[in-house]
Each structure stands twice: as C-alpha cells, then as structure tokens.
Image (cartoon, rainbow, N blue to C red):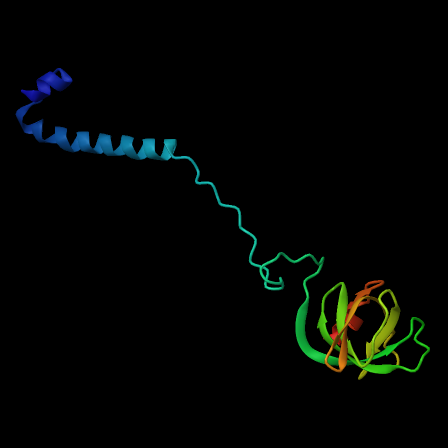
Length: 160
C-alpha cells in the first residue's frame, strides 16, 4: 500500500481514512505558519505633499505662510506711529506673516504703515506693517505688507 511506502508502517483497515485529512490539516497548518513567519511587513508609503492651491501656475509656494482670500475687511491706514490722519483701505488677502491691502494711493516699498480695522474700537492697537510691494490695478493700488511683529491673535482675527 501507499501508506507503507510513505510512512513506513501499516494502518489498521478502520483507520485508513484518517491519513488524508490529517495530511491536509498538517499541510494547511504549515502553510499558514510559514506565511505568517515569512511575510514581511508592508512598507507604509510616505505621504506625498498635497498640491499647493496657493501657488501660481503650478510653481511651489515660496512664502513662509500661505495666503488666503476672504471677505474684504475695511481698515484705517496711518503712518508708522499712527499719528497721521488715517486713510481708508481694504484687506483683500491675509496670512500669518502679513496682509494684502488695496489703497487709494501708492506707498513706497520699505515704508512702515500702521493699520487697524475700521469697524474696531479705538482700543484696538495699531499694527505695524512693512510694505514689500506696491502696484497699480485700475484706480486702486495693491499693497503687500509684512508684519514687523506678530500681532496678538485677538487683533489678527479682526483682519479676516
């Protein structure tokens, strides 16, 4: 018989049916153990950076803080000390590093402005902003500025 050749002894006639199921059970157990033992952990792919929606024409954003648009906020703009008669303006975009403004007149690059929300009370402090660029767009001037020091969050949220 085949059992005599494979395992070297003879099974009783009533136990002959036990061999195939035991063999399948052993083969299945070894397969599962081998699979678990030899299976290496799957490397987790590193997340790719998301497309930066603030970039221009697919170029990566160079700013330290991304810019965001929003509802324009009316502001008052004065000189560096906040002593000159304020002129009206609007915040058109903002970031943690500075603001984008629209003003009725040009401002020299490098000038320090003091701004505060127009609707705020007089207790809201003036925020110092250094002009980084200024360009004309129609009848208004688009001015980009950087905060000289980070304003408190309670003041920053007033700019939108």
